[in-house]
Image (cartoon, rainbow, N blue to C red; front, side):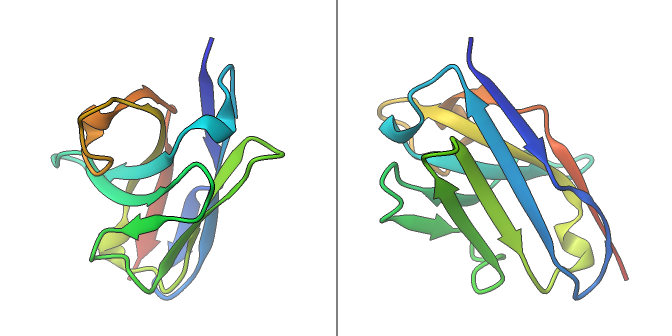
Length: 125
C-alpha cells in the first residue's frame, strides 16, 4: 500500500531553518506531482508548496514564497521542503501529499489521495 513518512520537524527559533523530508513507497513516485500542506491548531489544512512530477514546475503559498523551497529526488522516492527564515506563524503540523485527484487543484487538500502522518514544526519567538 501507499505510505508517506515525513520527518525533520522540530523546535526552532524564529529566523532559523528546518528541512522536512517525505519518503514515499507503494507508488510510482515519478508519475505525479507532490504537495506539502500544513495545519495549525484550530485552523484548516492549507497549501504550502507543490512540485510537478518532473520537478520542472513549482508553486508556493504567498506566505512562504522566498523562504521555502520544495525539491524532490525521484531516485530516492523523496520530496523535501527546505524552510528558511522561519516565523512563529509557520508553527503547524506539516503533511506531504501524493497521487493527484483529477480535476481538483493541487492547492486543495481534496486534490490528493494519500497523506503522511505529519511532522510538527514549532517556531519560537
